[in-house]
Image 1 (cartoon, rainbow, N blue to C red):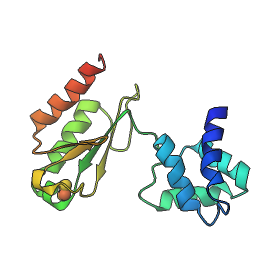
Image 2 (image 1 turned 60 degrees about the vertical axis):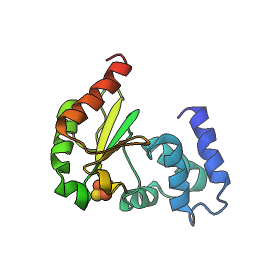
Image 3 (image 1 turned 30 degrees about the horizontal axis):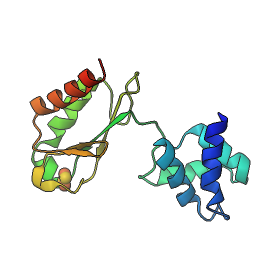
Image 4 (image 1 turned 135 degrees about the horizontal axis):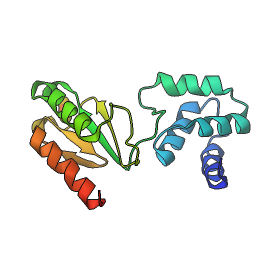
Length: 158
Ligand code: FES
């Protein structure tokens, strides 16, 4: 694992003198930096704290908020909450899947996109909705989703 990464995890661990008691906060800190909890990060935490990696992985996989896979530069979150569901979120998810050619939870080979299904994003009045990183998109149609993804691809020279 690269030295820079070690330093970043060290900075998280320094905040928690009892890392085992604060394991959730430690993992949250790591995820905030990298977007997910990598195997390397888990091994490094084990090396530094003696917390068994099986225990760290147990906690990381128990809580839905933790991701064990990387996310793309553009992380698409398709809302599957009730309001969005009623307004056709399934079609939205299918369109994203088709446009990217990957299953929910995966990342495209070029690392540009990942997508996932999430619970209510808190903007039900514009359902069906999705977020890409920090931006919410609402009143979605299949055409609109295709347009949004295409314009990102174009902006990235793809
Ligand atoms: S149900 Fe989708 S934003 Fe609330």
